[in-house]
Length: 510
Image 1: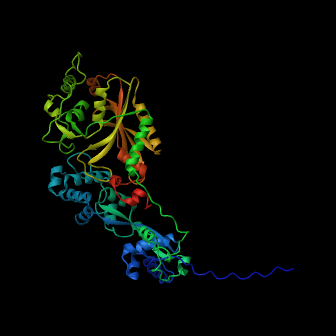
Image 2 (image 1 turned 60 degrees about the horizontal axis):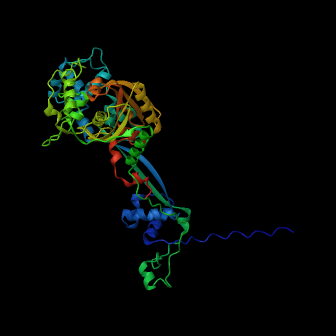
Image 3 (image 1 turned 45 degrees about the vertical axis):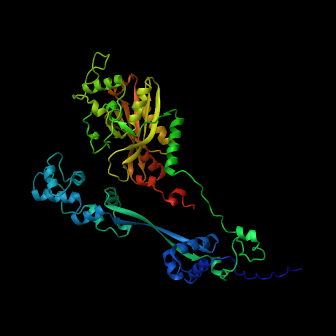
């Protein structure tokens, strides 16, 4: 027998869902757009609801499958206050070039400053003009013979004049340079456009304000829930994700970094934040007249006085500074700093400017090798706060020492730490630090900031080790963990490590 003809499908009945008054109003506004998406900020004007109420209703409609959203992300480039000043007065390199052209001869740094270019602008302008072939080497400053045409605009000048246009129309390299110099800021903005889903177009919008949504404790006590009419329960609605307490992502990263070092066999140590000049500088063979001790770098504490170390250690350090033999030795280690060692300076208090002070205290208390120690803690310096510098910063200091320890072992530690946190690009180059010789710097690549220095270190000098009673080679480092965290966490500004934005901390799940 031939098969029975199939009955045609019945048209689907409109979907019945429970909607509150704001949700009905918002969904009705989305329907009235005739199939076009509406920007989120335009919906309050169509509904008479405040923006926050609209946003809450949209999220509830989305969870019920009645509304869909498309999101557009864009960058808006704007001039910073420094950029506005540069646009009106001219970039520092242009102003210096004009000064040199007007004078038609050499200019001293003092003459440049008198002309209105302060020291910071002058340094940047000199470097830029030298790289572009305008300026000869040395002081006084003068134009190089055969320099480029000074009437040609610099790429940064062209970019500065077009800020506010679409980012795609700007010179990428010039824009990057302007951001690095603090002349422009980039804001990241997003636009959300909403429209009803297919189910939302056919959902019933009857007023169900008389229906109850939840059963309260009082209703259970007095029995008023009996015989009441409740809104239907939507079993398809997504369960809201509730994020419990969790560590700040930067704090969690620091704990993970500590665990890596502990796993490599290093012992953790701590030291005081309020430190004497002796432990912060003197024991590290930094001269008491060193410019880093001025108000321009180290934060001094007035009205208080620290305690000096044991007299024997103080005398050994004083002998090295003055170029005398250490008590018990026949000859001096070094000519010293050709100045009398001032014990009053040694007990002055400062906010610790480097965790190397912790290493010095550790080595003085544990003079017998082998040494495998690290300290991860805060330090303080007078710094111009920018994307990679902060007045209050964390540093991971450490020492590795024993018979046969060499610079190769130190580089191996840097490589092991980079590998452990997923960084594969590491560059090492020679460097200089006051209390290590030889010294190196390790650079890792940030996706937006380029190569940044995070792994400085070297072999501690005899002038540091001998007064502490140590006669084996010791490697030391002072890792910039905040910069390392920026690379690992994908942060482009060091200040973002301390943000309390909940969307950032919870990954948007709240």
